Image (cartoon, rainbow over all chains, first blue to last red; front, side, top):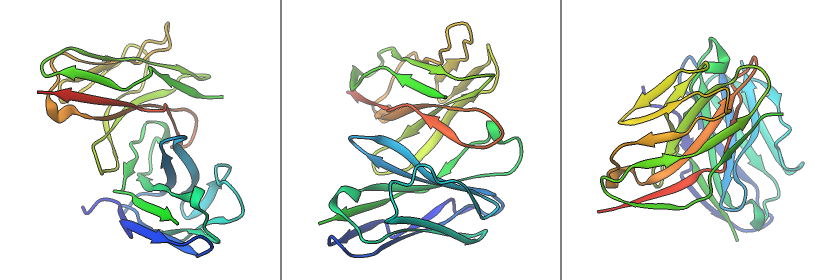
Length: 116
Length: 112
């Protein structure tokens, strides 16, 4: 299995531009998570989906952030407009069905976003 | 609510030294506990887990025991290697979903 795939791996953009991060979860997994990692805040859960439906978006920082999962094999996290404080590494993770509380989350390699 | 507290870092050890990284948690009910590791430039990966009290998780020479009486899940390794240099996260999962609550993480550096 290829694991969780994220693209791009690195993104440099200017303040005010729209940024779209992409994620392909592991086939057969029905949970998908978006995290943000910074030195100051550590690892933060932004939003997660179950069977393509958003379950908890309480971690989304503000209306500039939006996430979609149009099908079981693809999700996007969009920032519009981007700001320098959005600079971080964004991780996507997926988890298989079953006894959810004991399931392992499989992380992608992350997208390093720099907003100038 | 759920929370995970990890000892402050960073930690620097010499090769073959003994490692202990402390982790305590707050949660209702009976959470599952995890240690994740993040190597430089990579995403997190599961190191070990324990799903009930007194369970011991182990992998790659690392061990952690689920202690409900002290609400702890400390990570130990008897002899660290340079290749163990990474960031280590303690986490818990509680309830009917896969949502994880992570600690802040601690950076381990092992020098030859």
